[in-house]
Length: 85
Image (cartoon, rainbow, N blue to C red; front, top):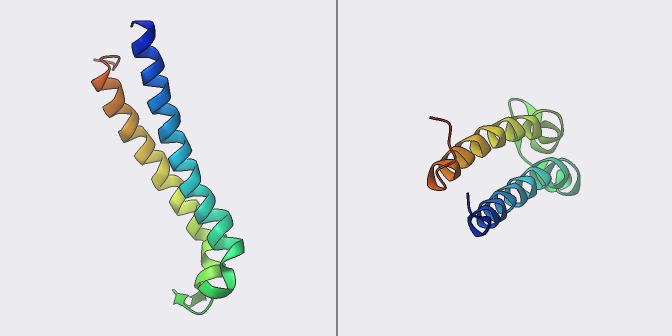
């Protein structure tokens, strides 16, 4: 892989990581700690939504983000022709 192409590949990879980690931060810290009082006005499964995000929701979001990252990286690998065939 040419050096210019490799730099573009890693730049795109870091963009994906920054966006996904930002989403994870908002789901775990933001919704579980910062916005807990506003979210507690709603209920999910009998629990206040802020509590639910702090205990369960952020874990679900993290697992979903793992699958999204795998999908995005497989697509990126194919576009730069570095995928496993």
